[in-house]
Every structure is written in C-alpha cells, then in structure tokens.
Image (cartoon, rainbow, N blue to C red; front, top):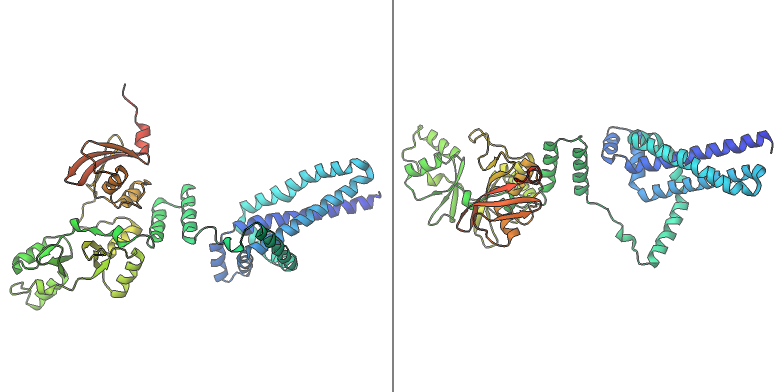
Length: 432
C-alpha cells in the first residue's frame, strides 16, 4: 500500500475518532448540564443556552441521535483500521484492529472527552449546542424510526411507553440537589434548611405547625374589664383568644392594638372601656389545611392569626403567619423571649434534656437530626407512637439509632425525657 494511501487511511481514522469524541463528550455534557442555569442564561439573551434547552427538552431524541452518530463513526473507524492493517498483517488484521481500536476508542473517543465534559459541563454544553442541533436535525428521521421499532419491541414484552414519566418529582429533585451540595460544602446548613422548609409547606398541615391548645394563653370574656385588661396585658402576646362558658368556646380574639386605639380615643384612659367588646371575630380553619394553603389564605384575608379545629369542630390550637415562617427560617425568638430555649438542654455526656412538647421538626432542624416526623408532631408523641404504649418514668427505648429515657410524666403526658443521639452513643466509653 502506497504511503499516500496509508496517510489517507490514518487521517480518516483520526477524524472519525475526533467525531466520536465530540458525540461522547456532548452526550455527557448535555445530560449533566444545569437546566436551571441554562434557563436563566436563555432569559438573559444567550442563544447558545436556548439551543441547549431545546436539545435537553427532547432528551430521548437527543440521546438517540448522539448514540447513532457515535456508534456509526466508531464502527467505521474500526473498519478502516482493519482494511489498513490487512495489507501488512493479513488474517491477523481483524484481531489486531480490534485490540488497537478498542484501546484507542476507549481512551480518546470515550474516557477523555467525557472526563473533560464532566469537568467543564456547562462550558462544554454551550460550545457543542449548535453543531449537536444540526446533527440531531440530520439524524432525526433515522432516530424516530429507531424509536418506533424500540417501542414496538418493548410493547411485545408488556412495557408501555406511558410508564416512562418523570423519574423524580421536581420538589424531590430540588431537595436532593440541595442536600448533595450541602454534603459537598457548597450549601450551608441554614440555607439547606430554608429551602427544605419552603418545599415542605405543601406537605405540612396547620396541625403540624400550630401551637397546641394546651399551650394557648386565653382569657375569660366575662371577667370584669379591669381584670380582663390586666390578664391580656400580662399575657406576653399581642393577640389573646377570649372564651365564654368553657375555655374551648372561643368567642373572639382580642388584639392589644385595638385596646390601645380605644384608650387613645378615650383620652388615654381605660376606664369605662368594654374590653371584651373590642375583640374581633375568631377565624377558624381545619387542621387538614396545608401550610402552603394557609399562608395564601393569610395573604388573601390580610390576617396573621387563626384558630385550628378538627373535623368535629373541636379546638386543636392556633396558627400564625410566624409559625409558618418558622418552618422556613427556623425558630426566630422575638425581643421578649429568652436567647436560649430552656426546653432543650445539652448535657456534658452529649445527651439532651428535652421537654416532651418540643416538635420533632424543630429538633431535626436545630440539632441536624433525622428523626421521622410523619406519625407524630412532638418528641413525646414519637416515643409513644414507637413504644405503642404510654411509658413510665425511668423506662428506656432505642429507636432510629437514638436512645430515649423517660424523666417525667404527668398523667398520660410525657413532660420530659433524655435523648441521646447516635454520635453521643458512639462516643460513650463503657465503664469497667
């Protein structure tokens, strides 16, 4: 074989390997590209980002075209190598060409371009977007024909095309991405919790975020005005529900601002004011309302306070805008509250003394725990649910890698317990 012919064959193989590298790298970059970033770049006027979004929008067609192109050039390159080596190696050319091209295609046609695409995903995707669109347009008819054949074959074995929906819901995908970046150090824990809190609003009900009725400060509307005024002013809250007959019979909600405004109109005197008459009508919402729906209802009603009832109309608690915001930003004590919370106290051995009514979600957020909160709202409720009984003082349990010890109990309510997280358990050295 003439030297010029050898140069031609080698040059052709090199070109085909370059095309193979282009297809392989493009597949990796376009399937791993940040769709959120590309969408924002498109909104900012980037034509290349628009090409990327168009390609990713029809991923099945994109992958089919790239695989078709890559397979074709790899087979053609291997065939040319076999023809080139046949002139010198004869019958051994097939084995030699297979061995050589396997190594060459693996290194230069697959691993190298895909490694580069992973290292510079977005830049690589933007660079190849236009030529890949051209390739997809050219190979599109063939890919469509192949897809029809594939689905026909899958249909014969009982696989329906409708089964291939989104692999992961958008909310779960966002949550998983944020968690991954947090583990890699790119997202701080506080930011992860805030994003997770926003995503959780559509899953949480007001029953999960409300203040339980046992913790509500209320006042008897039939008290003498001066006594009622004193009780409301000393409550430490800006709004106080009023009841008549029995504490669960709420007849209105008294706002301190309404009292101050009435006193101002009365010459800054509280004498003669009908304090109970200043109460606004109570707003009752079902405990099954989602936190997201309740937040929207607060916005539409221009309110910040609602009472929560169950399906029988019995009072369960109250919910405020601040309670929902706390699910996003974490507990934010105001200037009237203590800087530290006495209901969660860390001990020298790594355990925690915790009030039974502390919500599990707050513990998970503040202490970075992972206790389940689907079946119970409070830490005491979680222990009762898992123990399938109301434990006695001194009983100990182990759930989810944590250790629980009952410290105090009032009737059927666990009021205090010691919780030892897995890290403290692992660090504890047995005495002996």
